[in-house]
Image (cartoon, rainbow, N blue to C red; front, side, top):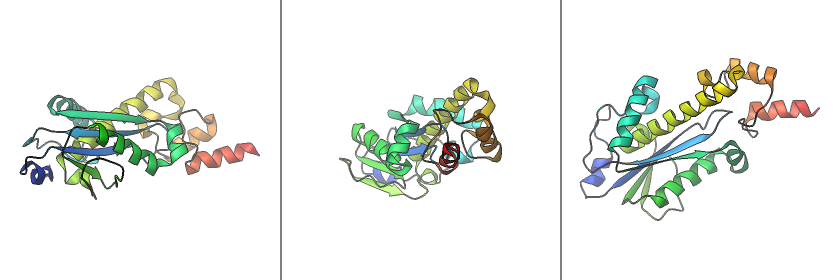
Length: 202
């Protein structure tokens, strides 16, 4: 639960606010999801919180509520090849700027990400998903979308355990990676994957 979301400072000035967050910067497999949400001015929902603090069941329930209540939302999928080509920071930043430039709003809040190439005023908030209602909502949309994606991948490649670890480099995941080898959904620029590729070259 957020005490007094940052949005109120802008809503009090009759400004609409876009909040953005991502899911999937740390995993070695699967895409990055970046989401943006605009709520009606004065919107309240005490259940919305940083996605990391919520159970999977609560996130799924809130996902439906958020897309129903939001004036606007967008979820971008950034694939593994784009992440490898640009690096994860730049890939995240560019996706956020794309969402911000498309959205009709007065102000933009991001979760600690500078947005130099947007046409609107913005603020990058450290731990924004704990301070902003729309950033927290965006974190839920991104997380739920990514988890669903990884479960679908798991159906096609059950040997990697993707539904369980969601692509993070757990011990079990690294063991499966070493045993079964690389697939297209792995991020070649990430340490454990890069290391495996280098070993297999020799």
